[in-house]
Image (tube, rainbow, N blue to C red; front, side, top):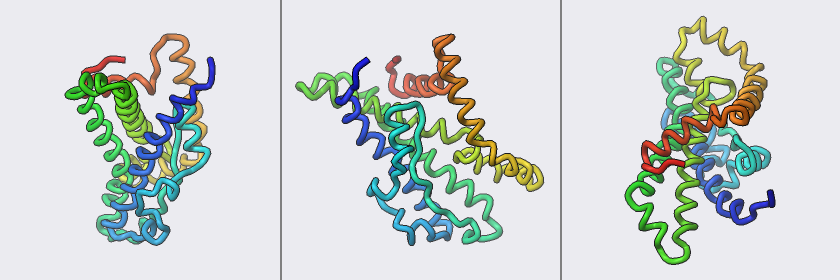
Length: 215
């Protein structure tokens, strides 16, 4: 299989946009909840260069997962009475943004996909970009919802648990990356053996549900 330079050039702006909005929303919601750490760090911006983690971006472009540079958040700046709620809001903000963008791009495919594809010679390219944006945003949302540290889902779950259970759960944080690696490798093994990807299956189901296209 040769190197797909054209595919990479189409994928790059989509990846940068999805990651940038994801991280911006973390910082923006934190700011609204009373924490200006991201603001002072220059992270409340749509400039992708402020959010990029080089390795994470390359992994998302060439592999099944990826990440951006985490937005700094200091929960001690939240009101004590609402701290756990605010942490949930901040952690869920990026996921929500990716779901919203995924749905938006999917609806473009549903209502304008055929017209878009038939728009002169650039139509198929535009169609592919919108499809790619749909898939990547759904992928980021679902992956980050996994309750495995350090993903957003782990912060949401920790703050939903009773305090004693949350402390016990947080104590396993150091094993999170090993669990993630095992899950990714296991998913790839299952996909090769059965043709069904554990991580890709829900993404494709969402894509079909909202866009009407099956891939």
